[in-house]
Image 1 (spheres, protein in one colour):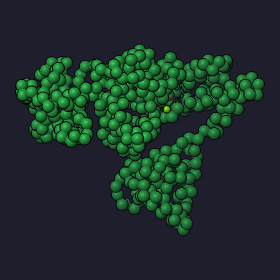
Image 2 (tube, helix red, strand yellow; image 1 turned 120 degrees about the vertical axis):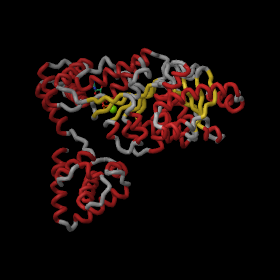
Image 3 (cartoon, helix red, strand yellow; image 1 turned 45 degrees about the vertical axis):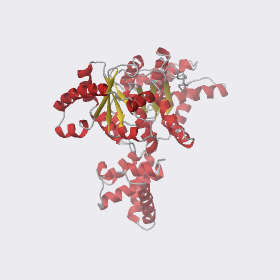
Image 4 (cartoon, rainbow, N blue to C red; image 1 turned 120 degrees about the horizontal axis):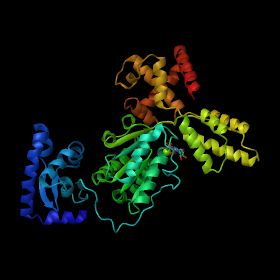
Amino acid sequence: MVDKLKVKLIEKQDPDVNKDASFYWKKCLSLIKEQVKPITYNTWFSPIVPLQIENKTLIVQVPTQFFWEWIEEHYHSILIKSVQNVLGTDAKISFVVKEEVENEKSPIHFVEIKNNGTNGKKENLPPIESNLNPRYQFSNFIQGEGNQLARATGLAISENPGETSFNPFFVYGGVGLGKTHLIQAIGNRIKEKFPDKRVLYISSDDFTRKFVDAIQNNQANEFQNFYRTLDVLIIDDIQFLSGKEKTQDLFFHIFNNLHQSRKQIILSSDKPPKELKGLDDRLISRFKWGLQADIQPPDFETRVAILNSKAQEFGMNLSPQLIEFISTNITSNIRELEGCLIKMLATATISSKEIDMELTKKIVKEIASDKKISLGIDDITKIVCEFLSLPENKIREKTRKKEIVFARQIAMYLSKEYTSNSLKTIGLYFGGKDHSTVIHAYNQITKNLESDIHLQEIIEKLRSKIEMVI
Ligand code: ADP
Ligand code: MG
């Protein structure tokens, strides 16, 4: 489809069609002019060149990819509204990037802004493996206060993928709270209701790995093109794209393309967009376009309901007392609730014992004791700042003030020791420092610890505070 348009545009510039396009574009411009500042108008609208109108689509040319991205991000609704005002509510606008037309090597870039549903024909596309686990359904996703909004939004999206304002849908929350379950349940429901839709679930790590493979095999374009054929793209744990600039860049383009074509994008993360570190601002701002919903740890009643449902699934017959005991003692994580039941079942089977209170207590205790809370850089920073009586936000400031540099070096040192984050991530956290700064901080503290008794004392106290949390 794109190639055909390219040929038409380059070889068959019909002057009448062009005149039409200019006529209507002028009308659009006069509407736009009323809504934006003159400087904005001159910078972002005057350079747009109308090319032609085809099937109620106004095709215009913009100078660069960046230009397109900018107007698409900032003036999307003004543009589409003015075009539809002039050409009717089913009108669309498409962009051609000038530098790509001139540069024969790179493919022409066509992006449509349109306001109505169906995009492109896909009869010839082979079906894809969705990668969804059939275990994750809405029917076994227990509703509770902590996941109510996320679940309801997920259901609404399943009815109308790409057509709600929840695009992208960004689900965030701590580990083991049901993010993967929910986003896969949406995928499964969509496949059930719309079997023809091309739905793909992928973790961001897999996405990165496959992209790297594609580059190595000279198939980066094919890779990108494949993603553009999807109707629903679900990416799990998007926080792991942190620091991976090339992958982010690719994802940015895929995101734009799908979003423009009203395809559904669903993302999960351990943090809300604004707290994601090491992710391109352009991506973060896009993550905020649709709906962000968090999943909070389940309350007591929800934990009981989840345990009852899982016990039934596993064929276990547990008394209300046992369920209550587990719900009271395992509180923060649904994966652990499930793990507890599995462990109980396994232990009872292996040792041919009854599942009673004694066995339950033993297993709950084991789970509580080998629970390693994973400590984040933010937890460490909090502990350090509290101890040194420094407001937390100061530590990321660009300053050479002695006490701030000191606190930052300590926080970097302890983050390297106690978390599994890379030096790069640690650096990013502390105001975009690079990894050599982190190494320097680490070496500096290590060296000073040899002779500085005051520092030894501070580090020792901090260690005991941190270890209390772990
Ligand atoms: P996350 O992706 O947030 O780390 P998961 O989706 O992997 O968490 O959930 C962990 C486990 O808990 C999974 O086995 C999942 O099925 C189960 N689970 C999570 N939330 C619920 C829920 N609301 N109802 C039933 N099971 C749940
Ligand atoms: Mg998950």
